Amino acid sequence: KAGVTQTPRYLIKTRGQQVTLSCSPISGHRSVSWYQQTPGQGLQFLFEYFSETQRNKGNFPGRFSGRQFSNSRSEMNVSTLELGDSALYLCASSLGMAGANVLTFGAGSRLTVL
Amino acid sequence: DQQVKQNSPSLSVQEGRISILNCDYTNSMFDYFLWYKKYPAEGPTFLISISSIKDKNEDGRFTVFLNKSAKHLSLHIVPSQPGDSAVYFCAASAKFGATNKLIFGTGTLLAVQP
Image (cartoon, rainbow over all chains, first blue to last red; front, side, top):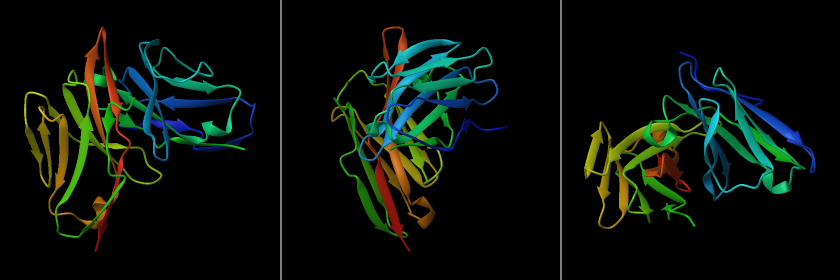
């Protein structure tokens, strides 16, 4: 069974640009959650999508957005990048909603903003 | 407001000894707790969980203890092995309204010395 796939694995952007990250969940998993990992901050929850609908949202500015497609694949977008957006972005999938199910994480997309 | 706290950013233990990783939470509504392990360049992987109706759950070398009155959980690894060296995240889940929310701690870096 293929795991959670995130692309790209690494990317470098400059301030003001925008970026789109992609996540393919495990086949059959309907929930996709996104997290930002930075040193000292742990895993900060961005949002969760289930059946193409955003079900939960963390405390991030509106520059962070996402969507989920009918095949459960998800994308997240960050517009007007800031230096502080440099982080590892992790996607996780689960059969049902994240809070009631074990998450399977991808390896992450490492974003560097210069 | 960090609802799930791991106050020790790092821990160093000798091989064969016990590793104890701690986690505190503030919200008594949390009813399900999980531990994830993360190696560099990989996504976190699920390790062990415990429901709030229990005070202990064991899986091989890993045991999680839950003290609801103290709002504290701990992960014991016995005996510790060099391959256990990783970042460990605790997570807590609760139902808020119509959705479940999963909140992660900041992580503890465990180094097991040979």
